[in-house]
Length: 273
Ligand SMILES: C[S@@+](CC[C@H](N)C(=O)[O-])C[C@H]1O[C@@H](n2cnc3c(N)ncnc32)[C@H](O)[C@@H]1O
Image 1 (cartoon, rainbow, N blue to C red):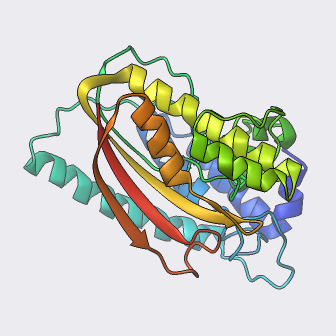
Image 2: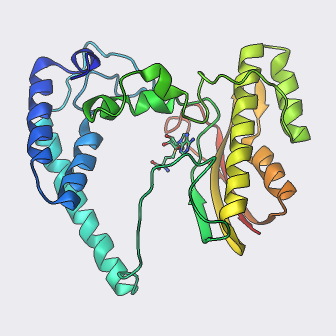
């Protein structure tokens, strides 16, 4: 068991989660096992000492974490209910026979065939707002798919820990943003440039796998860093247009500050090739 588990969980909760994990792993049906693992993963933050309101890894010494048995039962019941609703909806809409396959891959380079996809609907990573590897760490430690968090972080887009030092980006708008950041802090400029370049790779991959007349729907959040407006939505639109996508619709949505503290407004853009 990873030593960090002792850091994030009280001994009592660690024991209860370990018990649940063991029981789940003993289930012979793979579908049921995976369904229950999703539920257990979901309750880990609430049952840990992680500061509840924070996406950053921070201990809350006064936190009254939830009881894993109670939380797991409640969340699993909720998942069963929602799963049933979804299942019934699929039957009603005659989609129940549609094949569904979940693949865990890097969005910058996938194993999908070229021009094999009709629609892409995604909420891609935000620009260095969240450290995704950190957010996923409780599950990663319990399910033993990482040993070294530092290495794990490098696989993610929008990380503070990227290696690429270049501040050259393809879109003129993106370059103006990077140049403004460079005047304030070179490290932030590198991180944002890295994010734009990574997202450009993702969009190129989307272009490769999408059928002509296929659709892309992106949910993108703009933000401000060091008083510089990081117009991610506009930059991604630039990249998409240079790949010959056309904008079908842009929906702007203000979201309450308290819901996503680092993001001021959200722009949803729909494209077709
Ligand atoms: C804004 S979140 C959206 C999450 C998801 N749509 C949801 O609602 O839970 C962006 C996600 O992109 C994932 N991500 C980061 N780098 C990635 C990469 N290279 N390939 C695929 N996904 C990545 C992050 O782990 C994170 O879960």
